[in-house]
Length: 124
Image (tube, rainbow, N blue to C red; front, side):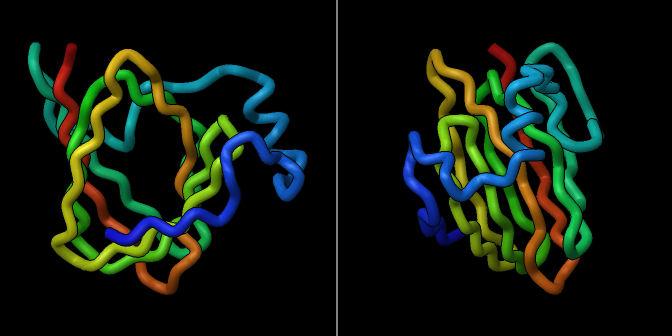
């Protein structure tokens, strides 16, 4: 995965009003995609985004790892203002530590391929 910052934290000048209103509503789900498996320790979810599709803003509270099953090009907007361009190759993996902070962001498929990502959350 390659992450390119398109917009820095704290700068909302380029944001469209619909997404800013979505943030102001402050009704973020903790569900990350469709749950495939869950037990007391783990949640395995799948995100499938067709070209042009977007997830709403969602809150990550647990550490998680992602594996991309397709090539993909996504935009991710964080509620802190940061916007990133994510370029995935099939088989790419990464691990994210949430520590004591929550991460709240969306994902939008701006590429030509349907993107399939599996997310493994480690419950706190």
